Length: 270
Length: 314
Image 1: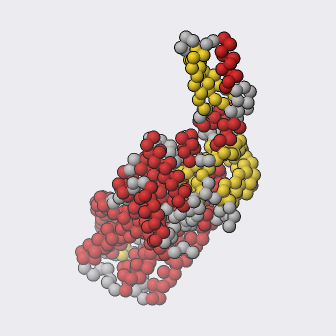
Image 2 (image 1 turned 90 degrees about the horizontal axis):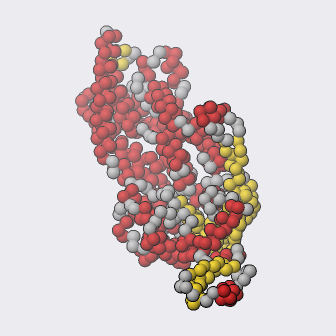
Image 3 (image 1 turned 45 degrees about the horizontal axis):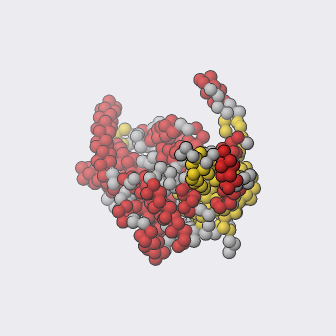
């Protein structure tokens, strides 16, 4: 039923809206520089003290490239759904969203899409280009870029569904900050955003492999860097399959939870 | 096609509210409390709204007006009873219902805060799938009713409250819905803006035959727009008829002012069910000299106040 026209209109509005905050992009880039300086010295110390060139198959150089790109993806994927939803619920604004002629979850996703497009071009792409130039060939330039785009979009959907699975909890607890910080920490740690999964102890890594979080950072980054056999279809397809699997599972779970949670608004007035 | 825009049959809505206790000890108790009380926000309300009508939906604060409106829009489920809006059960298919209604909740905005108004309109055109021609026609209708040019390219966050309300009303009518719900649209506006907004609502209702359900505390809105009003108090419907009947229904009151021999004015409220004006003058003339009289019709506002106050004491 939903026409493409509705969706692209929301993306377009999001793009225009994001462009109003040009300064925000500059601040993000500046904050990234500070964060990356910290990451640089931290990992330099780790590698220096280990006394070997490669830890768990990753050189210092590999690790830095990985973490810089992870930061760029973080900026791209960052959403404030938990905050936005809880604010909308507390102020009652949410009924205006519920009264749009689109399903709420779909409407929300496409409302955010414009800001993703903007941060792709204004933060991710510049970071990627700078890293690619500085490292001179450490990032392969071929089909992997296309595969990465597919993987990135799947990562975005998985990430959105994690957010939408967590956000309605604020209907029950009224503690937005706590929920958000727990979600943030779990996602960043278990997805490989702050520490590459290769550094995790063997047993722990096995567990993490079966969780949805790696579909957000670890898989797209591995695909982009062409590591672990993702330069072949046999290596690539299972990983995209894992992402697709989590997209569908989380979407179904999120839908079920939302349908229950929204009753708190429609039955008890929020 | 049926001729009713809204049909409500014996609709009730109950809320479960936690009984809060006082003080620190009470707050801690509340953490574990299962002590709920049931609040009846709306009890057994039945009403019918014909297509093309403008209905004034009145009641004191907390009477259940907004709850009723929310049930009609589908964001609240009734606890019992039936609602049909344009032949649809609103809460069962909220999304489909949303395509055919327009909503303005005073002080809330459905517009995109950071976008110029015209971009919000364009976006609404697309998500409501309004054909381009209808959209342009609607915009030219708007131009003929109000001066929208100065605000069309202004971001909503820079607008005054009046401009924003005006914009929100225009946005609610943009997809030419059959029914528009206006919940206190003139709240906080100055007199001239109120007048413009009333004219706009009236104009849109006349041209587009849109059914309008209006809640307000401003009797000026009611006098300007509504032929029929429904009053609810404490969740119950207490009046549902024409405005003209209203004044007779609760006794036909008029205020009689008389200037006496010593040039002082005395005031007397005449309930025409009990007595009449001429009789009152005669009575007065028995004791005083009456030099001049003035007769004032009671305003809608005063009647409504009598009703609200009357039901409180009842």
